[in-house]
Structure formats: C-alpha cells, structure tokens
Image (cartoon, rainbow, N blue to C red; front, side, top):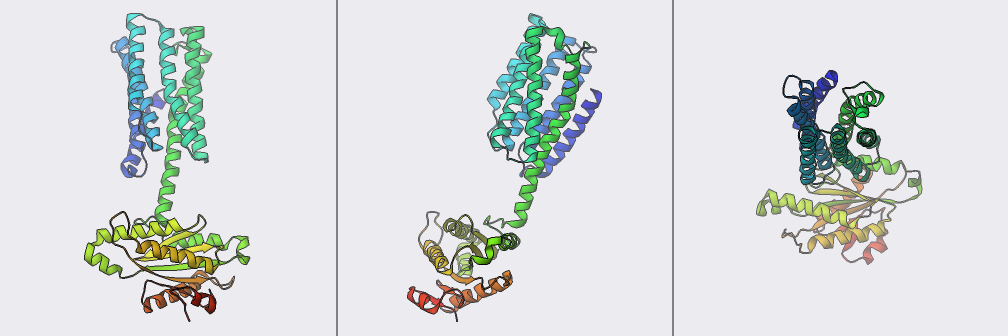
Length: 391
C-alpha cells in the first residue's frame, strides 16, 4: 500500500507536468492529476487513523477517496469533449460522506457502510466505462483504458454486493481473507494501471493533434504542402490509379494584397478561411484541398475527368463572387486545370502544368478558368463561356 501511495504521487506529478505542457490540446489531465493527489491523501489518512481520531480519519479518508475517483470521471468527461457532470459528482460525494458518517458514528454498521460507499463509487467507474464505449475510438488505447475501467467497476461492485449478502467480515480489509486480499491487490494495482490507461488515450490524442499540425494549415485547417504530398502519394499508390483520371486545380485569389491593404490582415485571414471553406464545400469526400502558401490553393480530384472538374471550378468561382453572410468582402479567383498525362508523370510536373494554366488565366484578365492543353480539347473549351484553353 505504501508503494502504491508513492507511485500514485509520482504519477500525479507526471500527469500535472503533462497538463502544464498540453492543457490546451488535451482536456481532463488536470482533473486526473488532482484526483491522484486526493488518492494519496486518502491513503495517508487511512494509514494514520490510529494516531488521530479513528472515526474522523476514516470519514476524511473515504471522502478523499470518493472525491479523487469522482475527479477522474470529470476528467474523462472533459477529455471526450463533454460538459463535466459536477452536480452528479457533488451529489454522489455528499451521499458517500453522509453514509460514512451515519453508519460510522450515528448507527455503526460496517456492512452497510461498505455496501453504500462501494455502490456509489461504482457509479463513477461505470460512467467512465460508458464514456469510453460511446465516445472512444476503436483503437488499442481506448480498448485498454475501457477494459481496465470495466475491471475496476466490477471489482468495486462485487465488494459492495458481497457486503450486502455476506456481511462486513467478508470485505473487511483489516482482516486476512481471500476476498479482502484479492480486493486489496486489485485495488492497489488498478490505481496505477488506470492512470497508465488514461495516459495511453491522452498520448494517442496528442499524437493525432501533432500529426494534424504537421500536415494541416493552422489558419484554414486544410492540408499544407506536406499533407498534400502525402495525400497524392496515397492516391498514386492506389492500384486502380493506372486507369482512372487524376485532375488538379491550381487556385489563386485575385488582388488579395488590396484586400489586406484596405481591410487589414485580420480580415484578410478571415477571407482565406472563407475561401477554404467554400472550396471544401464544393468537393467530394475523396477530393482534398491544400493551401500552398499565401493565397494559393491546390485541389486534388481523383477519378475526375477534366470536363467535370471544369464544372466544379466554375462553381467555386461563382460562389466566391457572390455576397456572403459573414460580411466579408467578395473576391475573385483565377483557376488553372491540369490532368495527369501519364503514369510516369510526378506531382511536380502536374503542378507545373496547372500553374502554367493559372498564370495564363492571370494574364488574360483574372477571374477566369484556363485548362492545360492536355486536359481538354480546343473545341470543348471554346464552347464553354468565359473559358479558354491554354496553348
């Protein structure tokens, strides 16, 4: 028990350190750190009960134990993005303290005290099992954490039921016995494992956040150049890619500098985010968009013939010219379209051809769409109003 207390204290320090470093990225760490400290306090109060008032020490130790376990529940709720159930937490904590006081001081009954306390604490664990089941991702980290929490919930419930059915002797931890020994061993072991389990899911969440930061643009939340390269590599690795078209749109805002000069960079940033939202809204789930820096966006459209991509580009252009509900200045874009010419053509060559079509759109007056010569035939492009073929 002493080793468990020391390890819980050490884990609390580790958890608090992680909380200080990543409080904005991962919620719930602070509650878990505080909960572990309360478990340490409970263990110390229980160990020193003979030196102080035994009854008051027991009440205080059980109150700290219930409060610490309850804080872990609140932390798990915050971790999954839910509002903490503070009222339920305070109600269960109050019932646990009142029950301990009543069956310890007013009407001594060890069996009732253990049964009620165990069943109330079980609610904290059961709630966390429910959270993992409903909101946890199907990954080893969540399965590991949920399994540990389920085992602990079952053990606590079993102790409470045993106290009701067989009396307090069977669950008295100060008396040697099979059930008491099993419960003590599991409780001490699980106090550490549950913390490790939560750290596992928290680390998994942090890993996902860091991976997203490395592949996404922080302003517009679309892919950055690195993320786009990864998406292109995955698409090229598709065995079906050899016989399906692959189209690229190169999109650039017209006169974006004048928007920054007239309205300020804060509005300019909002315009960029709005443009990214409009582009994403016109694409399929299989398409992806990236910001390549400044006001330039690139769209990858698998299994999309150039003629169909032309319609998507025209829709993007029309939506951006229309007034928006955010009160942002309207803007226009120039778009270049290129189709992958052969299976040996790389991303840089495809981007180069799309950029060449984009530059031609800029030269011919902006707010227009141009297609690379390999993308559409001259006859098709001439029949589309306002759209020319790059030569």
